[in-house]
View 1 (cartoon, rainbow over the protein chains, first blue to last red):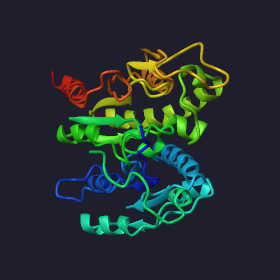
View 2 (cartoon, rainbow over the protein chains, first blue to last red):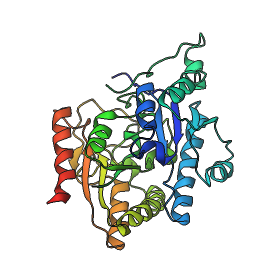
View 3 (spheres, helix red, strand yellow):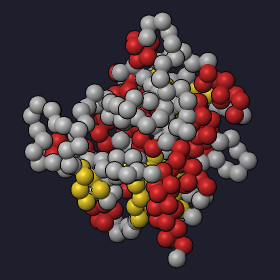
View 4 (cartoon, chains in turn orange, purple):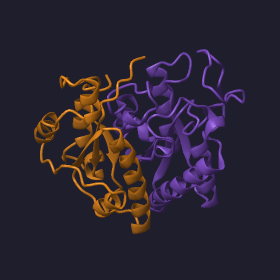
Length: 133
Length: 181
């Protein structure tokens, strides 16, 4: 089986994963665009729980980053920047999209992930740029 | 409805072991069912990724059943159990959606082979699936038991022989619906 990963990962605020009725369904846009999602803790979690979850996320982002995966931030989460800084990582380029088209356009304009560029110096988009269907 | 705490890779196939990613990013067949049924989605961490890294080998429980990996899993399980406890305090129903056959994230089927160790050279088809939980799920289960929190489980089933998406959907829908009884 050919590995279908995209090397593209979005850190996504909970409100885009579990949108309120009528709000932007960011998860659907990211799935269609072939991006993996790392969900940020919901805003109503106790601070200690959120801090533990964010530390785990930063640990995983660190491993992905070491291997040339690319990141964006969709929305935001209090404490994320500090957790990433603790792991020596910057906050990825961010968008707070108001529409599906805005998010899709932002994702489409991102550069090829370093891991894929290294595999294909000609700059092809590589595997895994479509959804799971 | 309730909250489904899902294995990390169901939203991010980039976390899979090499040659294990079924799709680019979000594994929609599970996510779609959860959303159709009105369940909130909460993503658990991938216990193997931060511990063994992206270049990890395909493994069975025997490679991960170490004191250090269990400590790592317990640390993650405390955070996840804290999140689950917060939801339960609000009266929400909780389901864990794992990955059947996984040495870490299996919920009713994991993988085990006491013969595996040393230079990795085993023929395809070596029997490894066995009843039981993966190591992270065991640690999370223990932490939830300690807190007196009950939960139900379902699993993504790509690794199970005879896998069919329709069967996976039926099983997941059955588990999600059980709380309504």
